[in-house]
Length: 374
Image 1 (cartoon, rainbow, N blue to C red):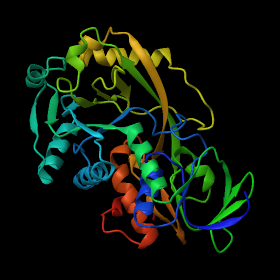
Image 2: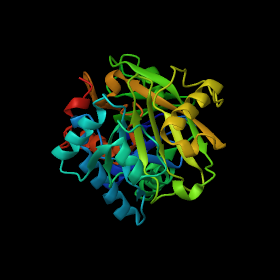
Image 3: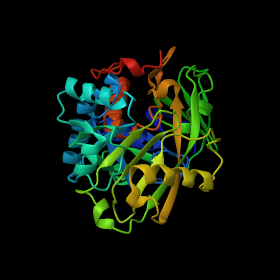
Image 4: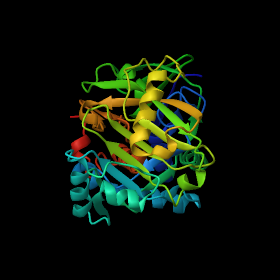
């Protein structure tokens, strides 16, 4: 590959990068999307069949942007001619004395999203698959659901290509040179200068931009899929997505109903720090036991079910589990998005629009002030 100059380069073809390339190409912008692994790989944060989408945030800064995120997904569905969102309903469950569900209910009220708050006893009656404590605090949001994650990424890359984007997969960027008049990507063969560089590289962002003042920690996330004996109780329409928050920091769990025959997905939110280049697909025995212990006191019908399959992915954690989106300080031609912190996929269709706005207009009307790098 010879040296060349490109107007827009998007680095990383996961959820955020594919959405950004799609948005730029849809606006008639020339764009090159670069991915270090084959498209659809399982080495980062965006692979897997499904992700949760919900308005139910305890943090009002995120809750108020969720209506925009839902609209962004509907716009993509209209453009693609297919659906990515499946409505399952969602439960936010907090141990008695923990204010998580209370804050979720307050945020949902502020954005006028229908919901119901109830005790754990009432929730168990509504949803027999659960067996939470009677004193737990539960908020049910009927519009929560799941997104067909892998399919959504694939379609956005396809649409970007159809509209003129160039996609370079299995292409490693060794370094980003910011000393010249344009950001320059150093490849194994040649260089690419960008008028505008959008970095959506997930766990590799800190390595590619060592001068970034924001602390980003790649962590290892382990996911289990349970094959329920009474599978009819865990199908879409009968079993919701759920978030469960306990008193201790590591007592945060999530899950979703069976989807595409893959079993019931359950995981603990968070994991140990990891080198993203180290490929480790093992599931720790102690972790599996911790998941089963959680299920025994929350969803007892799953606690003894066999694990049908497992996944490992990466979180890229920022302080306070915040998103980090915006222009690199001192460089209007470099835009960074590391908005994962384990809960970014649901926003990706909206963040793609934000990044395209920042690249083409220099600003965005979407209220991302709490996420800005500066």
